[in-house]
Image (cartoon, rainbow, N blue to C red; front, side, top):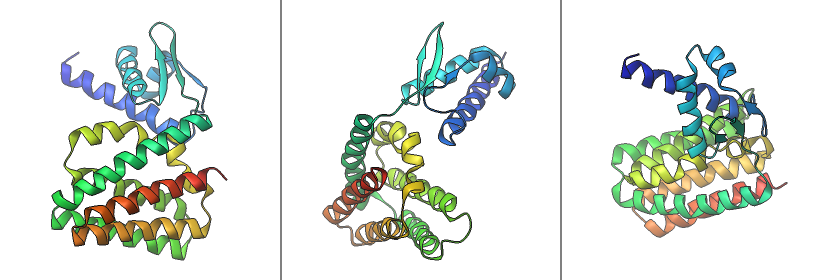
Amino acid sequence: MPEVQVSRAVDRAYEAVRSGIIDGRYLAGARLTEQEIATTVGVSRTPVREALRRLDAEGLVEFTPNLGAVVTTWNQADSDEIFDLRAMLESYGARCATARATDVQIAEMRRLAELQYRESVEHSAGHLERIGGLNSLFHRRMQEASASPRLVRALAGLIEAPLMMRTFQKYTLEDLQRSALHHLEIVSALEARDAEWAASVMFSHVHAARGALKR
């Protein structure tokens, strides 16, 4: 099979399993068999194996050659560590973005933050899914604005760990609005090019999410 086709097959298997874990279709502790995934996705077992290795590197599965993979189980210690790492890394990213973000990037983050705030106030049908998507996109745009490839790689397995993606399911209306207001304040700090302001709000923002998840 040509190299390009192999790469595409790996990407398809990777996205299928990753979305299944994040959406909760593959639960923590569930065993993932190469053959089952290969049949579901419509690829051979070789690209599935490579996809599982990639997911293992991101911490979403625990992969052992010849034995298969198991969806990672997250305990309280794991959760605390992830939030601590996120708080440090994302606040650093916000500090970098104040110096490196373009006006266009900042304007896009303001647009996302305003949409998220509107959703948090109106809370119409499907608002949690929309807020989750806007939140993820905001944080990705912040990473891009930091212009730090190392930071992006370090955060890859933290931002979209399953327990992070489902945080909003435990949010009260007050939590949702506070989260959106944090994003708006972070954007204001970027517009002012105030690194300490941006970093401190981002640090508080991540720890507020941890508090909501612990309820």
